[in-house]
Amino acid sequence: MKKSVVWKDKKWKTGMRITLDYKNMMADSIGKGYGITLNELEKMAAKAKRIDKVLKQGWKERKIGFFDLPFQGENVNNIKSFAKKVKTDYEAFVVLGIGGSALGPIALQTALNPPHYNLLTKKERNGCPRLFVADNIDPAGFEGILRVVDPEKTMFNVISKSGGTAETMSQFIIVRDMLKKRLGKNYKDHMVATTDPEKGILRKIATDEGLETFPIPANVGGRFSVFSSVGLLPAAVVGIDIEELLAGAAYMNELCMTSDLFQNPAYLNATLQFLADKKGKPMSVMMPYADSLKDIADWYRQLWAESLGKKVSLDGKIVHTGPTPIKALGATDQHSQLQLYIEGPFDKVVTLIGVKDFGAEAKIPKAYKEIGELGYLGGHTLKELILAEMLASEMALTHNHRMNCTITLPEVNAFTIGQLLQMLMIQTAFAGGLYNIDPFDQPGVEQGKQYAYGMMGRKGFEGKKKEVDEYIYIKKTGSLKGYAV
Ligand code: PA5
Image 1 (cartoon, rainbow, N blue to C red):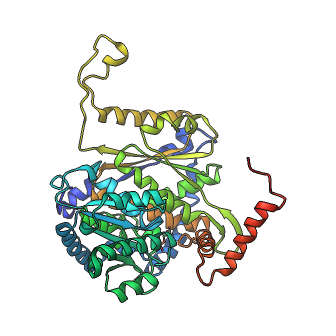
Image 2: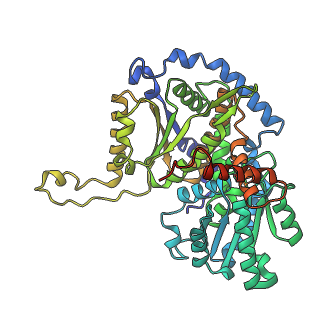
């Protein structure tokens, strides 16, 4: 939980730049017929310029809001002063949210705070509260969180852009009721709402009941909201340097200002992934070799899937397009998934994420010198071992003609994580242009939400309820009866 303004130093910044090595995506490295040729990549350069123009226009016209999030001075100050109050008065901070309203806070916490943070003493947590994210409605899981926090010393942060998501709002109603029973009118001091600045029922409730609120800009959707109050408030509460985080994101914006495909890391990675998909590799694996980055792979899985998995193209054609993101963790999943990636069907592209400096070495003491199978380990470190295993996986993939690329972080800190997440968001927005779909909507998710509203009896969704009843009836009595054991 480093606190510094070192990110203002130009030399330090350049030294902390994250890099993308894509040579193993290319036919020259993994073999003719397996990889992308330089000619194929060069042919995309003109298209990249066209997509760049559309994106920059969307940014200028304030239709695409996430580009601006690194520059939200006043909101950052408000978040910091609220976080300071929470730190003084509360022992736990519980996020109620789902999808884009939960994955960002989780990814930041795992990346930037020590492992097993909640088990550390208050002193070891620099006086910050424990953090819990209730991102599901499994009744046992949810009650499990409520059982381990003391409501009188807990701040609950309900996060919903729409303000109407059934999962989150159910949690909100349960918590509000519990707090009211325990604390009476003071329940308000234990709830903070993060939502649209104007729209939605959560905004109205918060205003009517006088709850503290933080805004999610209207032009920022859930999965692009990690650098809005959605990610920043929980991050600030647990002591993450949110200014350094945003400085990293701003730095990535700078790096992605160019419309030159070969100079822009986000555009280039999107194009490589797109060409891989077009070459029959729709499975896109993200495999960081660092525990701290495993929830970034989870966050990215939603970003890539929900943004690019679409039925209708921008010109109204039925396309049913989109790659399938898969998350893995090195070295753990070398013993679970890697066999498939190396020898299974040629349908995958693997992005490895490496870290140069882990801030730890974990020395392996010299032992069992006389036993060949073990003696060689002594004197090395776990850092050496994980880096060796990462290189070994890269080589095995490459030698088996499997497309792979590597993103490297000099170290895991708020500045490099800011860069990485912003790069992946720009990459996703750009990929929307390549796939010719709208990366910012999610009509499929909305359809599921509507069936759930119907089943739970929400007014206005009676038609959906009827559809559900008919579906259940056919399932029980129709020709599909009997397809269950
Ligand atoms: O990316 C998205 O838009 C979604 O995943 C949403 O984040 C998710 O459905 C939750 O929505 P809301 O924040 O409106 O409760």
